[in-house]
Every structure is written in C-alpha cells, then in structure tokens.
Length: 321
Length: 197
Image 1 (cartoon, chains in turn red, cyan):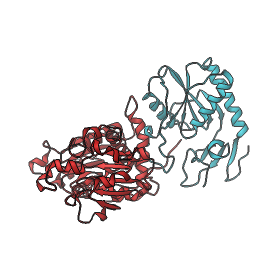
Image 2 (cartoon, one colour; image 1 turned 90 degrees about the horizontal axis):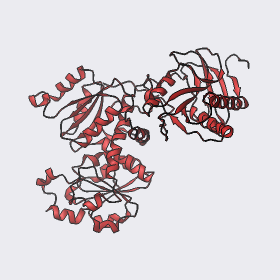
Image 3 (cartoon, one colour; image 1 turned 135 degrees about the horizontal axis):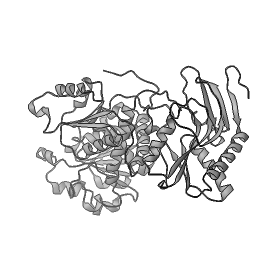
Image 4 (tube, chains in turn red, brown; image 1 turned 180 degrees about the vertical axis):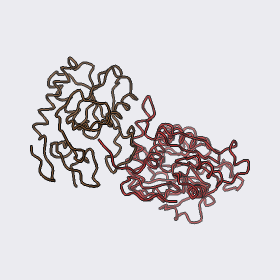
C-alpha cells in the first residue's frame, strides 16, 4: 500500500521502518527540522497547532518508558490526538492477532502508528496492513531508527559535522538495535565508526553494519575518539554469558573516572539509557562534563516532532500568501 | 508603471521602497505616540528584514532601539503542508511580548491567512497589549476580516497574478513586481535569493 511519490515534498516517505530507507540528505532534513522544533520545546506554551486533527496510535507491545514518553510528548506538542494501545490492557492479551489489532485500529481512521515490538520486522508487517504512516520505535534486535536520529542530532549539535568524526561504540553490539540503526547512519554521513566489544558481543560480520574498525581493547581506542557511545548491558540477556562477570566487564569496558585521562578533552559520551551505573558507566562519567546523556533525551522529543511532522505534513505544496 | 503582456511589471523600485518604509516608520511612531513599549515582529521570509529596516529607521528618528523578532508561521497554517521552500526557519522572539504594542510586519497582504496564523502564533508567546499590522504592499483579495494599520502601497491585482517583493539584502536587488502566474507556479513569496524560474 504505497502512496504516490511526490517530488515536491522535502521528505518523501510514507513510513520509517529502517534507517536504511533514508539517504544522507533525508537524515539532514530531519536534523534541520529538529533544530526548528527545539525552539517550540523551550517556549512557555510548548505546543503548536501544526498537526491538529491527526490521530497517532502508540502501539508499544514491549515495555518502554523514555521512547514512549518522548513520542507521546512529541505528538501532543504538535497537537495530534493520541491513542495508546498495547501493554497489559490491550486485546493482544486476549489472544487477538497483531494483524487484527492493526485492522481494528486502522478502521478507527488512525493517521500514524508508532510500533515497538520484541520481534524484528513487526513494524513492516504493520505497514502492510494499513495506509497510515508507520514509525519503528524499536523492533527486536533489528532497528531503532528514531534513537539513531536523536543520537545523530545530539552529536551534530555538539560537533557541527560528521565528516571524519571518530565514533566508538562500546558494548553489546550484537544484541543492540540502536547499533543496527546508528552505525549505518554514521557511516552514511561520513563518520568513522569503531566497534569496541569482546568477541562474544560482536556480530559474525561486523563490517556489514558499516564500521571502519573493530577492536576488543577500549584503552587503545579511547584516545582517538570524538564520540564515545556506551551501550547498555542488557541484564536480561546475561544468562547467555557473554562475559564471565559484571565486575570483569566493568574493569575492561566500563567508562570510569580512571579512564577519563585517556579521552580527548572535547570528547562526548552518549548512552541510549537506561544506564546501569557501575557497569558500563560509573556515576562520575555519567554525570560528568563529557556526558551528553540528558541532551540526548531532549533531542529525542525534537527529532520525533520533526519526523512526525515530516511524515504527516501532507503533500500539498500550493499555498496562498 | 505599465504592465506588458506576459512578463513582470515593476510597481515599486528600490528608492520607492526605501521612501515608503521611512513614511511607515513615521506613521508607526505617530500612531503610538513614540517608540516606548513598541516591538516589531516580522513574518518570515521577508517581513523579518522589513521589520529590521523599520527598526533602524525608528532609531534614526527617535534614537531608541525597539526590539525586533521574527516569526515562522508554518506550524500555524490552516493548510498544513510542506513546501519545497521555504523550509521551516524557526521563530526568534527573544523579548517578552507581554503588555507590549507589537507591530506585525509582512511584505504582501493577500488573503489574510498568514496574518491569522501569525496572530495565533503570537498569542502562544504571551499577551501583548495590542497588535498592529504593517504591510508594504496590500494587493487585495482578502478571505478573512483582516486589515492593515499601516500600508506602504495599495496594488490592485488579479487573482492569477503574483505580487512579490525582492530585497537587496537577500536577493541582490530590491523591487515589488507583479507577474502572471504560470500553470504549476506557486503563489506567495519568492524563494530567498531571487527568482530562478
């Protein structure tokens, strides 16, 4: 179910199911629009009537606090009407299939679905059963494109450009949907990505993601990096035993006060949250001067406003003064 | 100024625009009994430049700096749309508008819908004492009950014509022109940097 392409649109997409759909130019369009929406978020009245009358359905079938809250605020600040489906209160627990859920909600004339699911590819399936726009808000180990966009926005704001920027991503690469979106996007924009992880936490073919280097040694990589992106250790996956102990992981891959002297003066630390303090980051670094973690959260609202606005903005380019 | 068959007719040249702005600045000061408590807000993407010019002239006359802001009304339009241009440029009002007399400044007044959107946008920033409207060119064809307090020039136009302002600061030359709209062409402001059509 595709909409007709419209060459006049600055952002010609129906859905955002994967970061791979976006060209470098598309990504920069989103970031530039996010910059405009930043101003709206700093007003006393943080709301514009831009998308009055549009309905957005937040379909979060996996727990989420920050992504869901961020999307909901973005929708409300654009004056969208929102409906939250999913979770324990929805019909899915009564055994309704996902496709039936989508068809039901679609019949209520929803304009956009925001989809979070534990299985990769769910947002794609949703997009096959509705004419509404679909945004992937994280699907399994596959993609989390809006997280990547907010990371890019934060980095862009701090560093000004991606060209030749050295970005190190540390931690559980193989299970990370953030990586699935962020690494290809960074590579597309001209950054040089280094994946830093023990072999047990790397995918079989890390080069597919678009990383320039792969290493298991954080201390060696750290002095070169402009951006240090710490991934969350997913405690729920520790039974798979990717490393002997949390203590060992912290010693080898934790970003600690002791490692600060190895970092560039102007290096920034990103983390997608929620942080495991004392595992991948100690509190000194998480709250220190290098950290841009709270900026990332703010960026999230701005970037999601930009994206929803671009996808729901309509195709009419005839205006009258 | 005569209009030829198809190409554009110039209704105001650079000198005329400058003289008109001086007159408008005087009118604004006269109406408001000086520049106290006054602020100018220009609507993107040329009203902001006109607002800055007016503020400069007001400074020359009265010796006071009135605050100037710019307003992007894209998010307040009643025909939500994304255009090829202009891009969202962002609003920039760095002063408190509460209890001030705000003079909205725009280049061309046409249907009045832009002004309707601008009024809504301004209300989200605070509660001004009053809002006045200064327009360089009023071309008629109003679709809403809106009129300007200060008008540079009335230019009667046909619905199939485009009235556009170009300014030296961004386009390399200053003029107000009337052109016939070709099929598929946009109504409204010219892209920044001059027409390349």
